[in-house]
Image (cartoon, rainbow, N blue to C red; front, side, top):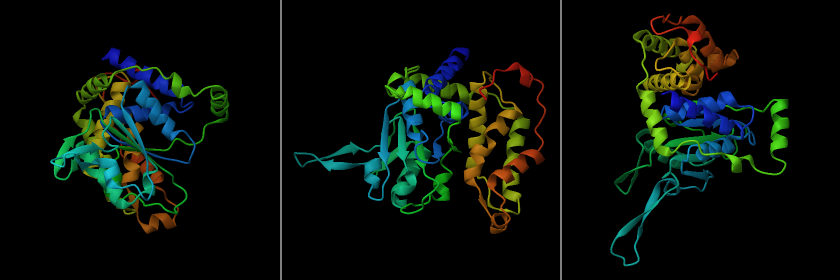
Length: 325
């Protein structure tokens, strides 16, 4: 486990050389990848969302495809289609952009709802169905989608059913002054993406994902996750709370967080570390909350304060592990 944990740290270092000053975001993206989840990056243009995805693909030797979503992009562009062969006797499958290890869906909210929904089965099942024929996508498989939170002209909001397919939603934000100075220096003569060193092969990522699945969770941690999720459903200010799929996402993310911290067991702080990233985009507030300027982040902070974490002492204390945070 230690060898693979070191490789995970090397991956983060390589990406951090390109996307400067965003190590926490980089760590959470890698956490989601190892948890077999998909990532939604919601942020302003030009902050490095696409660069982040490309850096990960190079460091992890993942075949990647990028599709710029616009109103005229069709489901066949994503999934592929069957074409009549030259002899006219059979049909041949022409793969869509989704047939890769890392699919970057750029500005996913600028395409039609029909094209957005074409991603649903692939994100959930890892399979593509075209003309009643189902094919597996390559493994590992990750969808990293971006969307711009400002400018609603020509956009189609993602439905709740599709938002729920993303394991986490992250916002990179603008860099601080020191980081932006370093970005300017690094970009003077070359593109840092060209210098990204491959750290692992794709099959090693699969091995790391399998190791994450074996991470131990104490029954009290399961209860802690469940109580947190229940609070999102019972709150009178919440119209739609976290789904059972969201609970599973939290469980998988905390396992990956423990793995990246060099542990084979989960502790309560792993849950609080990723809870808001997994839960926020799965919630819809009632009008009363919006009128009183109460945000989802406010509510989730309150929930984390109200629900007391369990005390785990049988497998060591917080001070005994190396943290990615």
